[in-house]
Image 1 (cartoon, rainbow, N blue to C red):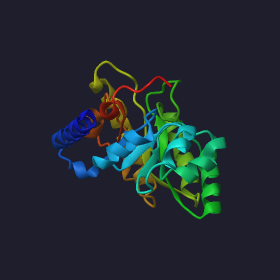
Image 2: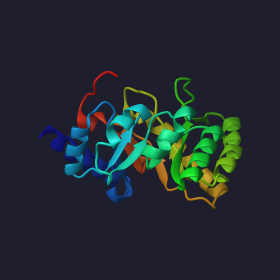
Image 3: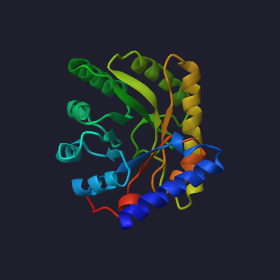
Image 4: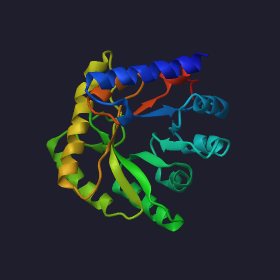
Length: 235
């Protein structure tokens, strides 16, 4: 079956990239991004060994997650609007795309109401592209500003910062994205030194076209859709 072959191939590529970087594949979480794919395909992927799934949109996840086993781990990997924060807290086990103190504060207040702490990643716009969401960190001034933002988020009791996320630019050669991934790792290391009271284990970076380079630069979570499920429907 092509799905089984795709999963095996992706896992082999993860292992090879980790070997090149002197890392263990056990350090990496493969998040299978299921945008536009129906619950029956997700269930089949789980039967083939996948347990971590990612959705880009809260409204699409609403229609899927309730129809699937509760044993899965669900990651919100797309942009989150504040007005959908409550649904996100109810649906997801981790949110990769927190891009403001305002959003983090809202998530924290909702989590306190429902009695949970939400693991979050801070989305960073490393490349400086206007089309991308995230904390801007392309200049020294912006990198200095994020320190005050992170300090405020770390003080929120309902969320737990576990690292950073970025989306690299679309490039012809995956190696062209390497400076973006390296910059995110360096930023994470800088934040970990500045705020040692928090744990910073995760770098969510790398998708179908560039995940091997991201792994070589330290990714601990890769968000892969097309290489697993094939070309998705336009949505």
